[in-house]
Image 1 (cartoon, helix red, strand yellow):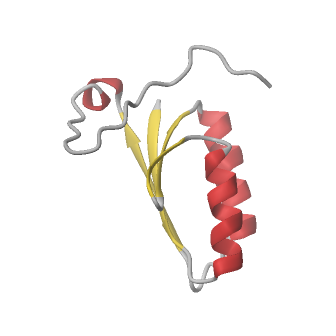
Image 2 (cartoon, one colour):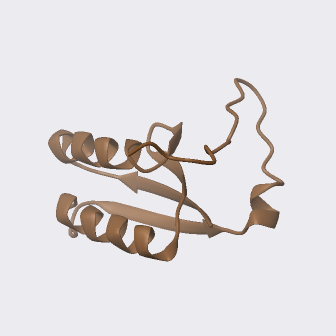
Image 3 (cartoon, helix red, strand yellow):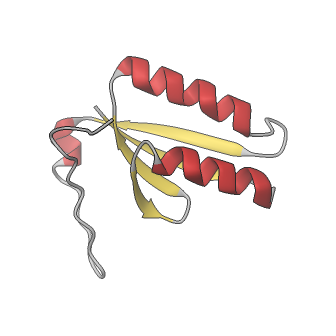
Length: 91
C-alpha cells in the first residue's frame, strides 16, 4: 500500500534526523512530504522509528494511507515528479 507521510518538526536537529529517516523509506514529494510503498510491518517499524525522533509535544507527523486505485489518479502539474517505485530493492 502507498502512504503519504507529512511532518512539521520544530527543531533543526530533529528535522534532519526525520528527513534522513524518511529518505531511506520513500520518495520525497515536497520538503516535508514523502510517499512510501510499504507493507503493514514496515509501516509499523517506521512509525516506531519516528516516535524515537520526534518531540511529541512540539512536532507532528501525519500518515495518510492511499489505496492503489486512488494512487493511480494522482495528478501533478508543474515540475512533475514520477511516482514510480522500483519493483525490487537492493539492501
